[in-house]
Amino acid sequence: MKIGIPKERQVNEARVAVSPDTIKKLRSQNIDILIESGAGLGASFSDDLFLEFGATVLDTGRAVYEQADVLFKIRPPCQSEDLDEISLLKKDSILIGHMSALSDLELMESIAKTGVTAFGLELLPRITRAQSMDVLSSQSNLAGYKAVLEASVEMGRAFPMMMTAAGTVAPAKVFIMGVGVAGLQAIATAKRMGAIVTATDVRPATKEQVESLGGKFLEVDPEIEKDAQTEGGYAKEMPPEYFEKQKLVVASHIQKQDVVITTALVPGKKAPTLITRDMVESMPMGSVIVDLAAEAGGNCELTKSGDLVKHSGVSIIGYNNLPSRLAEDASTLFSKNLLNFLLPLLDSEKGTLNIDWQDEIIKGSLVCKDGVLVHPSLTK
Image (cartoon, rainbow, N blue to C red; front, side):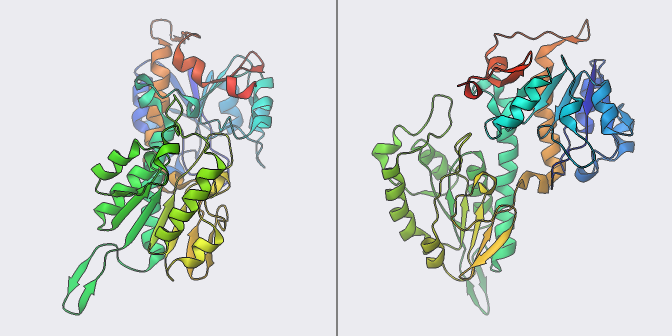
């Protein structure tokens, strides 16, 4: 069996879907690894390093697509200036990666028509057995960490309290909106850097997690929040009256904050607006907002996807794909997620895949098969 790893062709994507350690483990299963030349450079993995660990480096992405039985991808195939990846997908081949399936139905339909069997690891069920395959968690963890670092660079003031002969520097006040994996890592990072941290989330169960990391939880409406989580562990879309109340609570709190990091996402839908123009204008001069939902429309009304904007002295960071700014670690973790998904499917004796199509993980992550979309969220 041959696993192919083409170069990621989306703008500002530095990650690669394999690491040297993953290559080593796959080679131990007698699997051939085909990598497009230069695919790992953005993550500090050279072609020579990949060769050293037993991979075969091919000159072009076309060669990878033509020869591979299974494709590992960070992002879904796309039509770029130098290569139409979708047209190269082979019938009966297998594609595994973060497919962004709920965000682009038209793209998923195009991929399905090629006959490829595609798995989107962002769709994995929230069960214990799938945790080691969860690309959302591995990448969000890094995004939460990087968000705090980006804020600290832009703010121009120190995070921890400092006692000096010239006077005392007050600690920064950091407010985290959305306590998923990214939010929890942002809380932990900001606390390690010495900030005073508060956080809020629609799910009341996160209060204990926030407090365990040394943060203070800001409640909005405990009654509505009782029913704010799906059975799969994701946040539900909240009713309009909740957001009205949230705006009032947040508007009062945000006036005193130096840094606000927003992480609120609803799968397959536009990100909810949590910070209005008026709230931004009420914040202290020199404060910073980092909007981790920028690609999904943004949690801040003034966020510009992929850019940094300033409004009334407040910096609003809307950089897309923060994990790619930590490409080496992000690639290493992502490739382990892919490996952990693939290994249970391997028939090591025959060197082929033996997929149980009734398995909960397979059913939950399968995007398309036999030329049609099959995931329930895409066929409604």
